[in-house]
Length: 213
Length: 213
DNA sequence: TAGATTGTTAATCGATTAACAATC
DNA sequence: TAGATTGTTAATCGATTAACAATC
Image: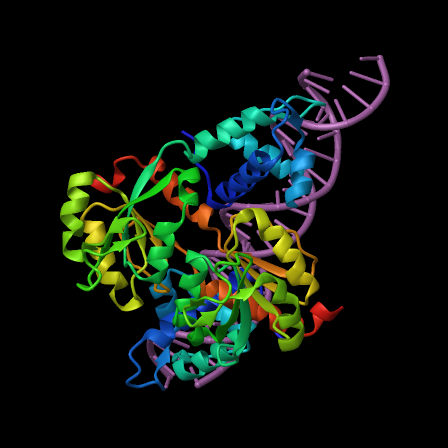
């Protein structure tokens, strides 16, 4: 089994997006590491190294077979196997994520939504009947779901997380701007809403007026 | 002026979140780099180095003054100065972001929303009357707004981006899973929705059954 | 003073890039 | 064959961590 670092995974995603997005009139075409590197501003050596990490080999003087690269990347990134996730916190953001249709392309599906607000429980949000937060644990036990999307207010995020973890969740996509504490076997992926803002704001300050050039 | 790298900015955000979140009964208290490092799983030397980068000095045997650290970080991260942003693409995600009340804490404000769907134009979404996409350029010229939140479908993202850039936008928070091409003076910050999913999915595969331990 | 913590230099680590022989 | 590109090793670069004298 291939072990990938986060930076590699990030680049593999970008390669896939580039290659799968190209016009597919002739999908057996070859593409060189230089072409890919050029398009994505990545060193060609890095591209070859990354491909090597997922056992993709090219041909001297010709490059890599586009179809093959795409297929392998889909396999490694597991886009064709659907993973189910529960969503906790059926507010605006939760609703937006539930309504988002693009997840299917990446093999990701939200199968249930929970909220502790009794006014929301029973209501339909983006095609899902919101369930009571109390029913999270039985649901997870029954359906063996391992991923969760967390869109709760920050003050309850840790409590909810503890429940999710003890019910078997091992991957959390955290949209609340709150640092979660979890056991080592659980992966938290922060959406980093506030960090995105900070970076933009910092950029503004860094180059006042630069946009006028 | 201090120049910070992205990794530093990320850590500074985490320090701020930790320190501002602590109970503020005695805000003149001191905190050591070891305490911070321990709480955030960062090397204490790294903490001191990062503080040094924003001209924060501590006292031997005592540590850093919490109040002072918070104040300096707020200043560096510019949380007390509000930056305005326009939002383009008033769909579910756009609406969720418009409805999000937490932005104010970071000195960020969405001042207008645009969409090219005539059925949405004129409607109210989360307190904003959606404006026609055609009016983006005049709006930006008039209000001198430099940041944009992009929540459009992927197929129009680049076109919209080109318009935004030529109208003076120099920072784009990109929620569409699409690689944007921009001039060097423009910063694109990708929300990386699809990457978050990939990382979670990959984690699941990496350790099948690990959550059962 | 004694002792804990800072500030800073040196060492380590890992990731990126350069170089080039092997390949097609 | 000739020439462009791969595969891979070595060199570089930057970021992280260790060590320790200076400080309070």
